[in-house]
Structures are given as C-alpha cells and as structure tokens.
Length: 206
Image 1 (tube, rainbow, N blue to C red):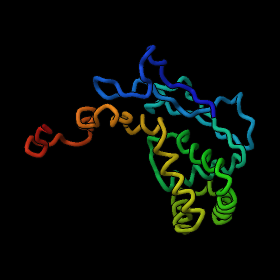
Image 2: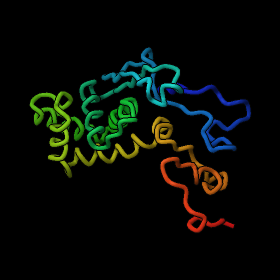
Image 3: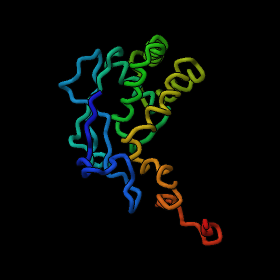
Image 4: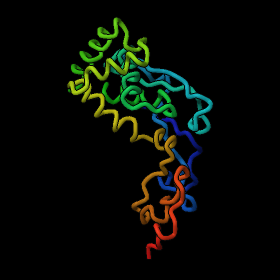
C-alpha cells in the first residue's frame, strides 16, 4: 500500500511520530491512501474526502483509492457498508472504512467466510446490500449477529477503523505519550467536550 503523507515533512532531526512538546499535537501524520497508478489488484475502491472533513485540510488530495487483490470492488463496497452499520461514524470518511475491506482482503484464512457472507447479505437484501435502505441494512446485519461472518467483520472493524492515523486525526487522538512521561502533563486535560474538573476532584499529582 502506497502511503501518502498528509502534512509537510518534519524538520530534520524531529521525530515525526511524536507529539508537539507544547500542546501534544502530532506534527505529521500519514494517510494510508494509495495512488491509482500503482493499482493492479482484483478490486478497486475509490472516493473523495469531503471538504468539510478535518482530513481535507491535511491530505495532499481529496481523492483516495485502495487496491484489493482478492475481493472484487462490489465485495469491498459491501464491507464498507456493513462496517458503517456496525460502527457508524459520520465524521469518518469511506477512506477509513475501506481499510476494513483492505485488511480482510489480506486475510487469506477469512476470505471464504467473508465471500460467502457477502453473497448471503446480497441475497437477503434482494440482490444488493449496498442499495438497501439504512433500516433494512441494520435489520439484515442484526439477523446474522453471532455468525462467523459477522464476528469476523466486527472483530476486524475494531482494529481497521480505529488504529490508523486518519481516525486519530478525526477523533483528536494526539498519539502515544507513555515514552514522554505519560498523559498527565501531555494531553490529560485536552478534552474540549467535557467540563474541567473541580480542584477537589483533580488535586495536584505531586
């Protein structure tokens, strides 16, 4: 997978993966997007990042593409749609959900279950799970809850959707801080959507 940097390279000698010393922000991120001219696989997932997304200001291009070597484009799109049913996030672009399809595409042991599950979803949807209404998609996914296919996709979602730089950027995660002394003085109070604790509830650490 070709990785496209979404921010200018860090200054010489700087640790690109580390947080900014002043405010905990990550100075450089990498978006796992692939250039079309490198794609030679079986399936191809493409799209564009919305201009309203925080990623649009960081990526060198709004267009993205992900190569699938085993699954077809249609199968990849079905996995994206199922991923959105299982873990719906309006702020996450399809580029993140495409990583779910990419990772399952690379799991040879899971491919038979994934392919059969996708085919069953399409059949239950009357031909195309992708074209089903949101209500019907939810009902179809609930109907297979606990099946090997459901568990495989759900389990992969946890890693594929949340352990990547795009999700970190969208959710405001600044990166690891343990090697720099922990979060107590590096991001512990960065949350903007919670009220700051009272002095009694948050006494000095030392």
